[in-house]
Length: 314
Image 1 (cartoon, helix red, strand yellow):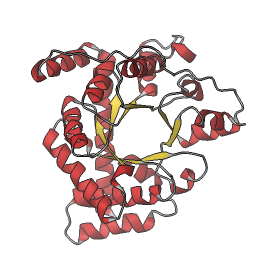
Image 2 (cartoon, rainbow, N blue to C red):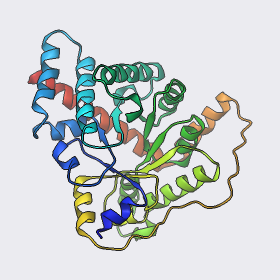
Image 3 (cartoon, one colour):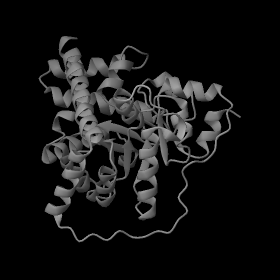
Image 4 (cartoon, rainbow, N blue to C red):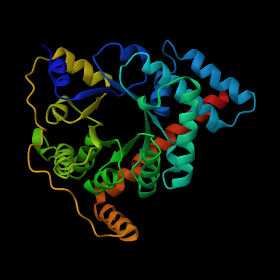
């Protein structure tokens, strides 16, 4: 049995690609779609009609935002015809500090999926884990719209997401490692000493110990070793290259995440303003989390602009 097959018995596997053909290669349950992944896959089989439809809508007078939302929904619809689970669709990262606009964007995405006949329970709205994004997710979840909070670099982000009833969070393992390797190029960060791995263990065990239902989906891996150290995480989102490596490997998989301790329900006496202040200070006080969240939002925004430029010039 391959390492990938063993891993799939412990964690739900998610493909970090929007390429339809790659999605058919491995036993993944969920997938994701965002501007960068759609752009990467746009020249592959199955995307010509989707991209053409977006460009024609733009020429017919629809605004750019509506065209991008239509493309994401069409790509998501096709992905869901391949995978049996859910697809994440990303909110424009430039709205990461605007709660109301994030909510409005999410509703428009859901409307596009609904027009295509997609079951709303198979969609996760992907939002950057700023305070404003977390507030938007709290409202959306109260309305039955499921969210995936991305760019998680700190336990505090995970806790607020869980307090807000968010369906799923995505801690970014590899980007945490990148930060510490840049600071200490000769450091030993292998295996369980990887700071990204350590962060996910802390987040997973804390959320499970408090009885939260929020699922933990470790993401942004740099190597298969990180993935194996997180076997047992609720979900693992893995790039096609690493999926291939795991499929060709026969290394035995040991479950590393499986909380079996006492469940202690959380108690908080902070009002909304105090909770927000505590969150903002925790993020400000952690240089890695502060820098990587800001950097991630900028990168996502660049991908959004790149996609818009490609559509307008097509």
